[in-house]
Image 1 (cartoon, one colour):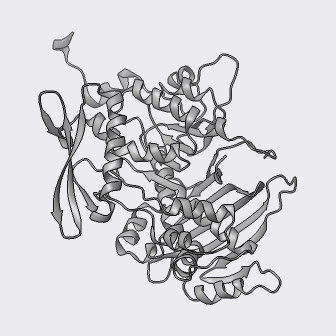
Image 2: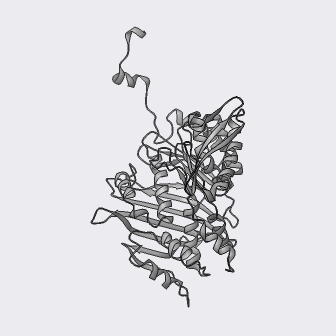
Image 3: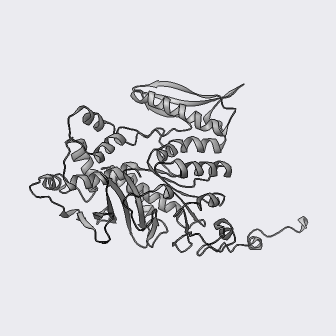
Length: 454
C-alpha cells in the first residue's frame, strides 16, 4: 500500500443526509503487511436524490478544511454551506479513518470534525479531534492526539522534554474556531517555520496533512469552473531538498507529493503561469496519449497560447488528418475525458480520488475498460458515484467495491452470494432500499396518452 490509505468515511448533515452515512474501504482486520490492491475501487449506486452527490461534496469540504486555512472565512463558502448543510440537523459532521505506514509500523488514525453556526450565523468548527492506535492491536481504544471544542484546545498529546506541543498551542490560540488544526499546522509550522520534529505529535499532524493533500474531488455539477488549478503548494519541497534536515520516510513522502501540482486541464481555456508551462505541456502530451485510445484518428493536440502578464492563456486544438478543431467543439464524452484525465492519473500514482457521476457522457465500454485498468494497476483509491449498472460485473470481482445508497439514506454493501448478479438484482429492484418500483403506466397520469398512436 501507499503511505496513507482511507479505511472508512462517515458524514451526516449535508443536503438530504440527516442520518450518519458510513463507507468502508477495507476489511476490519489489518494484517501486518496489508494488501489494499483488491480494495482500491468503490462504486456507489442509488436512486436519483438518494444523496450520492452529497457524499462526494462532503469529501470536498473535508479536503478544504484540512489544507485551506482561509476556507471558512470565505463568504462564498459560507453562503454555499448555508445552502447545503441539512436544515434538520443544522450541523455537518465528517469522520475519516485512515491507515498510515510509519517505517513498517502501521497506525490507524481517526479524524472527526463538526461545523455549526455561531451567533452571527457563520459556520465555525464546533468540534475537532484526531486519535490513533496501532493497526495490529486487538484493542479498539484510540489514544487522543488532540481535541478541540468551540475553538479551545482542550487536549494535546505531549512528549516528555518536548516543546513542540507548546509551540502548537501558542500558534493556534484563538484561531481554531475558524481554521482546522491541520490547516494551521501547515501554515504556521510547515510553511512558516520550515522545521521538522521527531516526536509523535508532529508525525500525527503530518499524516493528517498528507491525507488532505492526497484527496482530490471531481464534482460533475460543481459551480467552481476555474480554468487552471494549482491545488498544492510547491514552495516547501525546494527548501527541504536544499537543506540538511533529518527526515523520515513519512516526511519524505510529504515532500515528494507536495512538490507536485495537480494540473487540471480545462476544455475551454487554461490560464497557465509561465513558470508552469513546461509542466502543462507534458500534461497535454499525456492527455493526447490517453484520448488517442478512444479516438484513433486523433493525431495530436496543439496548444494555442497567448501571453498575459506572467501567464499564458492556452487553448487546446485537436488535430485530425484534414482539419483542426477547438476542444470545446468535441463531443461531450471526449470533453468529459479531458476533465477526468488528471484525476485518473492521480489515482494511478497513489491519490485518493472521488468522482461524482463518473458515467455521465461516457460510453459503457470506455468506463468498464478504465475501471478494469484502475483495479489492476491503480496505486491509490477511487470512489465514484454512478447510475450505470454495466460496471457492476467488473466491480464485483473485488471486495468492498459496490455500495448501494437507499432511498432512506442507508448504505447496503454488496456481498457475493452464489452466482447472483448484482446488476440483475439491482435492475429488478431486489436490492434492499432500492425498490425501483416504477412502471410505464405511472407516467400516464402525468403525460396521458394519445389515442392517435394506437
